[in-house]
Amino acid sequence: MKFFVDTAEIDQIRELNDLGMVDGVTTNPSLIMKSGRDIKEVTKEICSIVDGPVSAETVAPGAEDMIAEGRELAKIADNIAIKVPLTWDGLKACKVLSDEGRMVNVTLCFSANQALLAAKAGATFISPFIGRLDDLNLDGMELIADIREIYDNYGFETQILAASIRNANHMSEAAKIGADVATAPAAVIKAMANHVLTDKGLESFLKDWASTGQKIV
Ligand code: E4P
Image (cartoon, rainbow, N blue to C red; front, side, top):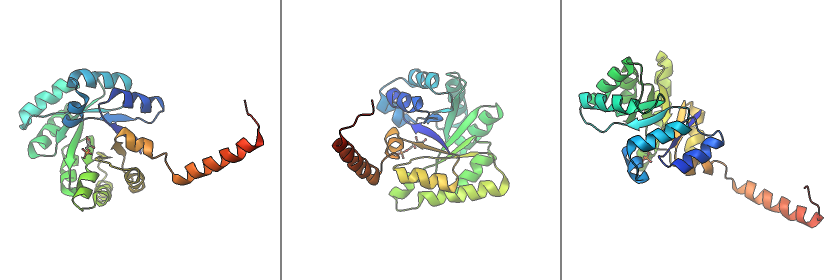
């Protein structure tokens, strides 16, 4: 499973990228707002750090304007994936932009039917939002499994990009189901390293080691 980091914070992207943990980046209008930076400027900087796809989201409601925004965002760098919402206009924009050979990430997906439409429209990525479904006491991970089954049934090449990931368990669950990509905040990716038994084991090893009075270097 590829890891995308869901942020527009340069320091966080750089730290994880240096460790080989970043296969791409996703941003959205809220993340750009949080960064406090100009969308084109910050997205260009991200693209200069990360080789993989960097999603930049359109904000126009209508297909024509969305397409114009998508083309403009695509000028930022060769690795831009244009993010469009899963509306009927978004699907129209997806079809046009995909036919032009651009990467398109269809976002705000909350049902298997929406994912089926995005694949038909030629999406490179479909972004089902796990956490926002869980927030409503629905099962976000079940949606990932449903989309995996449907795409595999018909050989759709659209990649499942599990999004709105809120905790480390979401990452392993998405990987077990076979999501192609998971995008998560840097804190969630780092939390994947944590285990209470690791901390406890290390503490006792270090205590015993200290009693030997030895040094390795
Ligand atoms: C994905 O592309 C979105 O930017 C993101 O995963 C949304 O996550 P949230 O529901 O935590 O805002």
